[in-house]
Length: 498
Ligand code: BGP
Image (cartoon, rainbow, N blue to C red; front, top):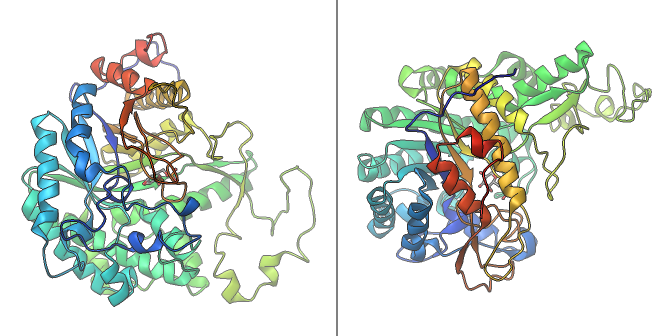
């Protein structure tokens, strides 16, 4: 769709940047903070890249004033951060640690004094270790009650000062990484259990949203979902059907529950057939469907989507385009039902490479148009305002005498923000855009060398850096973009940056 002129971004558009507690704070055991599952997990040899952990991270806990001063200098309008549950409730429930709450009170005060809108995430993966040990974490409904307690404490302390809240960050990612792929805590490989614990997180999300609506009437709350749009490999109707299946399995499975209060029929039936669908009680249904459990906006984290073709059982087609007969040997058909239950998507779709897209140094597809498609799809389907809560480029940056020439990052952001502007022109209501990330920070599984920030932090994989901060070229570019409220000039690449 071609426009002669794009709509302007709204005047109060929230140009922001994002982070998460474990990835920046450090001070992992200071001022009464209890351990989280990540504090433990990252210290087990082999679990993270070169053994990196967030004990110090980028020491934001002690340097938050310096970081906020940089945000202010940049002209940032919003800052998304997460609250560490075990800093506030060291055992996950019960005793409140006032010193932990004070850190967030001070941070929010500092942000607001500098004209920056705080956006607080309640849960960015760092579950209090005590809850994992006591109840098996999200495997138990007791953790839902603990989460409610935590939310109540935090809403009471900060509800008046923070307008925008995010419940769960990328529920689709932490449930799958923790319970299917086994590369996040608690490192399990059990798909049935994953769907069960995921259901508990859905209930916790509904509980938090309902409670928020009671306690913070003027505020806005929603989950941040890791959205990946799906393309069919070809216009063969069977490939199109496969992409519909993948979208249902990868996206609607969560988004429908958040926004409509129930699971999508197709995936639910597929899981039921395999005996791995979550048990949904009558009370659960009521809770999920309650009007006050609907989010006020949807947070969308966008990095990349995927491409699929029809499954190989019905019509075997290889990536090289050659047809092969899998019917006799297809491992899925030969597997007992229990094993099929570990691979529920096999009959639904088959992931393939997208030949049109380039990838990052870490192999993630770069797809700005897909970002516009994603915004359109989500907005059309759920009719909720969208806040882009993460989008950005992870790269190896080169530090040259205090300068970091990250033109590749500027280009990535420019293209994505331009497509977002087109989506706005298409009619999508976008409240704000939080680039991932403001400063460099710890990547959960890729250490400190996968950098995303506008601000370079001298921290290395061996965790010996000075922690000094340096503005990258992208810092000055984003500053200008904000100043011009995302003008066509800067988005068409005509502006010179330092
Ligand atoms: C998202 C997470 C962020 C961040 C980002 C980049 O999934 O919400 O916390 O880590 O991805 O991921 P990575 O560090 O793996 O490159």
